Length: 416
Image (tube, rainbow, N blue to C red):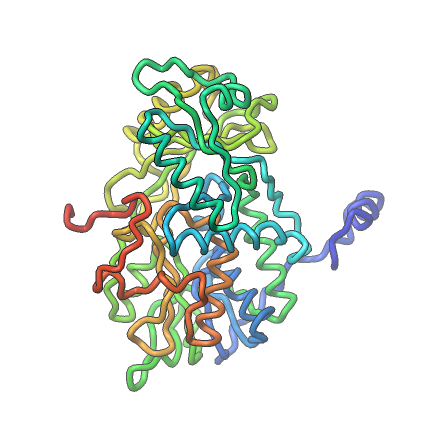
């Protein structure tokens, strides 16, 4: 079924009884041309682009639970391309371009809203750093506007500009940034991949790998062995655990990142706003809830719930920036398992095992990277060559020292 406004009207007038399932629930075949482990946004995007761009339709996505129940549904939905350094700059620029055509591409409403992102600065040095970042963004072909204090105050008059410790000096405005509906992104890619013949196998956990002469030949799963000459690992915070089953030790630590949402409120926040001195970010959902988050919990964990001290830290940052938020009731919180690399940048590369590919280490930036991550991982698996916009995301950079230290926001293994 192709979605359209007329179809929505027709279904509404007939009791919505004509909608069909978004994707099939097939049994796994004994063998495929390629397997993608992980049914989140990155894995589903990889499978879709393998089928759509590279014509590989005899493939399957293996998900240990239900599609879209991992980090793709446990984030703060921010989409942006405001990176500074070569390697990240061109990658996220490419991803944003894919976002802008995604709904037409998938024939699915992912609720992509380019409402703009404003990164606040609170010192002369931070303002200078944002000016440099903005120039790098413009040189890359993206948009950036450096705002002085008065410019920020015209757009965000409700902030605490006279904060004694961290007064607001200005901000970097990225108009094409914004948000999208995280669940809808997973559903859209899943539906589109299924229509191209990709098998989406749920409740199928990978328990091991089979190899011969140093090359992967397939996987062991809770639903039996499945053969394939190419296997992609796209499992976010579980990357270290899964790679260990193949005999690989990755430069990744898994940490919990919490997020929060308030009760529904009248429209008050038109943009995404980040607090430069408090690592706090906030936007308002279409339902009216204020969605916000902050720092990692700062200890290795696979729990998806977080801890109270970090929740208190995030609430303090919220009150410092927007005192009015203290009147809102927090409805719920949740945690996502972040796969943190030492330099805070991802890995899209072949592993030492022939036919085994890795897409991991997304740290804080996984959601906004979904389209380009899938695009580049599909290119890698189909051609055995890295895509040009992901050429610096090599696994061996942690051995050679060619790191992409964007903000030093990765894990520090020397401290653990």
